[in-house]
Image 1 (cartoon, rainbow, N blue to C red):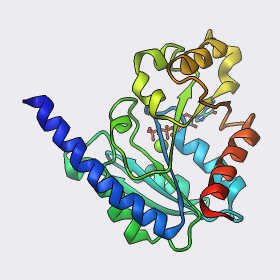
Image 2: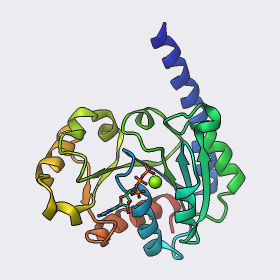
Image 3: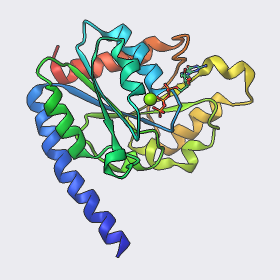
Image 4: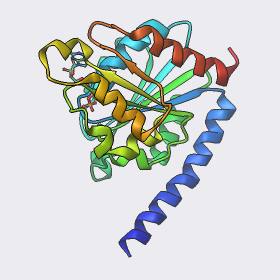
Length: 222
Ligand SMILES: Nc1nc2c(ncn2[C@@H]2O[C@H](COP(=O)(O)OP(=O)(O)OP(=O)(O)O)[C@@H](O)[C@H]2O)c(=O)[nH]1
Ligand SMILES: [Mg+2]
């Protein structure tokens, strides 16, 4: 019975995600769903990324957290259009569902955007199951989390179109084997591009930025 309920929730979400996807298509905006465990550096990566992409690319961000507007406040410094969703009012959900993205995106308006990035709630499991009408998914893994995470939480890495290995500035102080972590990601998702970066120092940023620029060009024709 529990399985059936879960299935219905996901089916309902998929129906709503298809409507949201149609809205994004009509608005000609590329939508990236960014996911990771809490604290791997999604917001820091976005703050630095937007600094490079804007104003040539017009970017908006929808950011999800259970509580606080901390991330929206950090992202607002970039001058991007930012909307914060807090899920504590919906029972503290650990993921963003399609209907929340749909309502936020329509309210914020996408006519003046080329790229909409959704920073999902920090969680390496649930967000991977919820289609939000996005064009692509990025997963961020940081070097303090352990090389085995792609093997332990494979779905997140299987549904991702691109992976970012963040905080490489910390490698000299850790036993973390970056090559093994990348191998593990490629084991669960052969062929997935993996960019090794530091959001702190911006090391390795250019290939990641170019990947994003190319995706926006492909969708918007710009
Ligand atoms: N040394 C180092 N620290 C980083 C890097 N990226 C992020 N951090 C730090 O890691 C902590 C968490 O970063 P956030 O950007 O808030 O992580 P997040 O994934 O957005 O976290 P949630 O939104 O809570 O899931 C902060 O203290 C950042 O300053 C990095 O590349 N190197
Ligand atoms: Mg964040």
